Image 1 (cartoon, helix red, strand yellow):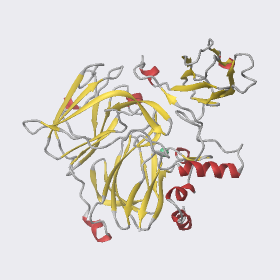
Image 2 (cartoon, helix red, strand yellow; image 1 turned 90 degrees about the vertical axis):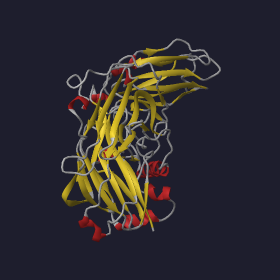
Image 3 (cartoon, helix red, strand yellow; image 1 turned 90 degrees about the horizontal axis):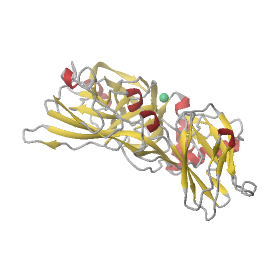
Image 4 (cartoon, helix red, strand yellow; image 1 turned 135 degrees about the horizontal axis):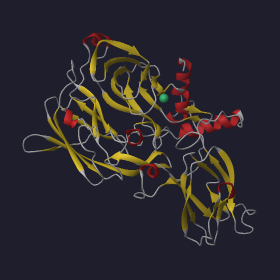
Length: 451
Ligand SMILES: [Cu+2]
């Protein structure tokens, strides 16, 4: 984005300003899932999508189902009987009386478009019909269309609508610091419960998240170098798990790699991790992440990750004459791209991502963590960044950055200084992770620099 764009952005309200950047009118799919029905890990990852049979209409009229399949929870919210069918997928319910509901499993499918309607005579012609679209952008909506079927006016309108929704309110906020229970001997105890909850990734999109303490990311654990730490993990998942302290120096038997260093922690069981908090090798601090190390390719992308930070990260002396003298704000930003959560920053997708605010000349410390399955080049418009640490170890010489490739498992610590006022986009620069024909989505947020 050029400086001229930036000036345009700073005109008008924040929402309209950000509008130049962004997205739109999404399928109004209410996605729900019945908690606790997760019979097996693969089933638990399948979304439940609500379909309402109303007065001569089916809501949503356009149903977007991922290729991995879904459960359709069909509810008759009308005052007369209806029956739901997708003949092309072999779905046909009995007559549903007012208030009745039924859940139908849509198995794994290849991409395609089908018709759905109410099979009670006359109802289809009266308007009870719609379209079922299988496939496209993984969990959630299709954000990646080329826009070939839209006029440019429609595209602009869609982008404006989506942009104006930012920052959109959603239920749940992850990554907040967890207060320890301090035991008699000074040990700091942190209690984590691994469990599945409904998590609102963006407005109206509820997914089955696999969480620590019901939030994505899990709460931040912060301790000082030398602290005695105890993390008690209770497993309320429908399968085993274990907790690995990624990037943190712990005794081997606390490394959380079942079945080598411990048995798997089975459903209903607990495991206690105990260690003395150490700085990284050649470091005075540590920047780590705790996450599952059991069926991890599913459990982690579905939400089982949280920052663990030890000590404070010093500002390198070489940056102080350049105005990097104190830290106004510290931010953990956990990247994800897969599982039920999908493309997200700290468990939320644009427009539900969190904007950050700085005053001119203030410095923000950002810890990037990538818990996804792909690399992400994180790009913050104008404010100049210096990478000061990688994986919790200070660089001997800080490295300038406006775009930083963060590979899965990596942590980078960056100091950004606010230079000019404005709303500065902050996003992954793999563009299909950030923008579609209907505007921005996924791995996008903004830094607002106040005068
Ligand atoms: Cu990306």
